[in-house]
Image (spheres, rainbow, N blue to C red):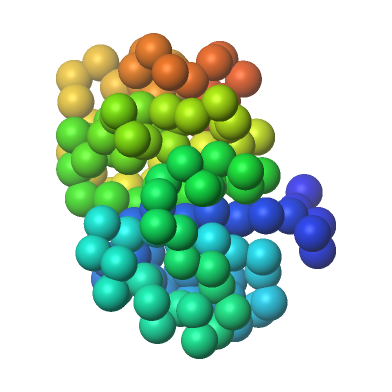
Amino acid sequence: MATANTKIGWIGIGRMGYAMAERLAKAGADLTVWNRTRAKAEPLAALGAKVAADLTELAACDIVFVMVSTWDDVKEVVAGAHGLLSGRAAPKMVIECSSTSSPAGWSTTAVTSLGACPPRYQVPSVTP
């Protein structure tokens, strides 16, 4: 359960991601956001969110939500050369909630199969 001092990270400030991060910021969450186009994330700073310059800054968060547009983008922002898990730190939990078409073989080990994420960071898949 999240507590008042839970650090939340958000990757992807598109149409859905912005609205969800905005609600968290307005509620006073300790929120750090990152978006490929920084200008889309900057309005959240006025609501109290911190805007990260680098994905690895979100590794210090307890929970990081990922909401991007394609499976390739998920792989890049999580396990890419400059992704969330490219540094020494890692969040306690990564919640992948992009509305993408899953590649064949999608499973609960999809993120861990990227090779950078230990099993304790597995995210259960939800199938329609």
